[in-house]
Length: 350
Ligand SMILES: [Zn+2]
Image 1 (tube, rainbow, N blue to C red):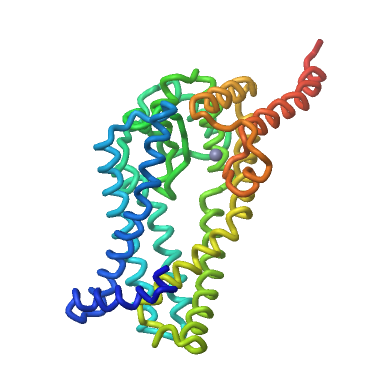
Image 2: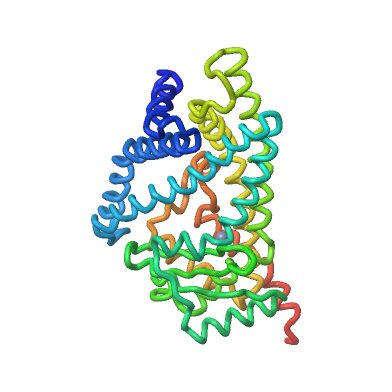
C-alpha cells in the first residue's frame, strides 16, 4: 500500500523532518514508523489469536502479560530491524555497485551471531529458563549423547507454564550456547521414558547438524533475495522512475515486498525440508531408545495437550507444516518397530 499510494515518500519526508535532515537518524525514524504501523495493523489479529488460545484452554496468560509481550516483541523488531536496515542503506551508500554482496555477507554474520545469542538474550525476554535439575533425566541424556559420540552442553527447563498449557521442546543456540530446552509443562506430565524419547529427537537434530545446515540454506536464500532486490530496485529507479536513487530509503517497502514474495514462494519447499529433518530426528530417536512405545505415547500426549490436528489435509501439510502431522509420525514409528521385530526375534537364542 505504501508503494502503490506513494505514502512511502511522505513517510520518508516526515522522517527527514523529524531527524533534522540527518540521513542515519531519518532511516531509524522511518523504520520506527514502519514497525509501529505494522504492529498496530497486526494487533487485532494477534489479539484474536490470544482469545482463541484462551477459548480452547491452551493459554493461561493474563492480558497484562500478553500486552507486555507485544511491546517487547515490537521493541525487539525495532532494534533488530533498525540495525539491519541501517546496515543495508549504509552499504548502499558506501558501495552502490556491490552493496547486495556485502550486505549479504553482513547479514549472514549477524544471523549466526543472533542464532548464538538468542538463548542467552532473546528467549529470556519472554520466558524464564533454568538448568534442568532432574538428575535421573540428566543421566539418561548423558548416556544418550555418549552413545551418539557427542556432548550436549546443557539442558534447560523452560518455564512455559506461566503462559501456556501446551508442551514443547527444542534444540537451540550454536557452538557454546547450544542447548536442549524442555518445557516444564512437558517435564510435569510425561514419563521419564517419554521425555527420553523427546530428548533423543532433539539430540537427533544435533547429530544431523540441522542448525548449521539450516543456516546454509538460509544463506543461499538470502543471496537469491539480495540479487533479486538489486535487480528490482534498479528496474524501479531506471525504468519506472519510482525513486531517484538506490539510497532513497523510501524504497524499503519494495525490498520488504521482494523478501515477502520470496518467502511466500519458498514456504512449501522450506517446510518440506524441515519435515525431512524432523523425520530424520524421529528416526534417530527410535534407534537411540530401547523401545518406540514411549515415543508413540509421548506423541499422543503431545497431540492431545496441544490440540494438534492429527491428520490435516494434504495441502495444508504441504504448504504450512514444518513438522510431519502427528498421525504420520506415529505411523512411521510403528512401521519401524515392525521392521525391527523379526530381526530381534532371529537374534534371540531361543
Ligand atoms: Zn524436531
